[in-house]
Image (cartoon, rainbow, N blue to C red; front, side, top):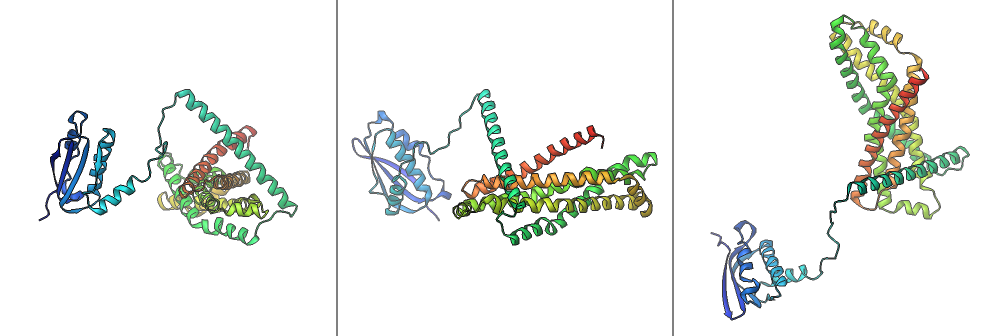
Length: 377
């Protein structure tokens, strides 16, 4: 049976306290509270020195270290001298190692409550600074694009093709699944109300117009923001951590041209194709509900969809997908270029890229919808 850890006090001299430790000093054995020792070390006790006796200690782990460190801290506060010769050699070495380097002043993070107006000012300054950084980044990308048109941009064509493959064919499964389900949900919700009025056939119009004009592009953009924008941020952020971007600058290669430009071009080229595929899968989801639940024939559903969805709706969706492709690619690349040099910063950059991409998509959708409504399209 394991001996419980115990502590006894004795005073071999008038102003000296001896702590006799016995038993198995491990965490699972209910180590005594240090409060009893602290009471013996009060300034009015007259104790000027403390020593230890551990001849009866049968085992120990980090529990005894925690106990002893608290006692040593109490002695330090009360200007009491400590003698650790009676402790096991391993404990003495660990205590010496723990006290070898003092805690650096300011190492602990301090949480200071700032006044409300200070928070507003700091938020405004950060917003302005972020806006300026984004405009500078957008300007550099525009300059790189103009250099590409003149045939002077420097990036690997093989990398460009691999990025196209990743943004295009590799993204089709998730885009297909999500947009098919969105079409199913949209048709199912509409069927609940339209069935009451015997207007089930208009499900084809609702799903077709909703997917082709807005939802197809929006869903594809959100999927790519969560999938590709985070990937761009993580890739470029990891290169920043590994100082590969500094190496490109040292060799005279622009990181914007070599890393950002091919990613933006690839996503802008692939987003319209993904949008068309998303529209198709959304309409297919509506078709499944219309034929399977409401008894609409495939021919009727097809004819109603063709009659309801005009070419202008299709072009609006394609235009939005191009805008979303630019926003998603810029969000991922910008956060990657802003990444700091630590492992956690790469994760923060990926998270920020997704949030920025989705937020920009929602804002751009609202602006485009309002503008087209004013124009009358």
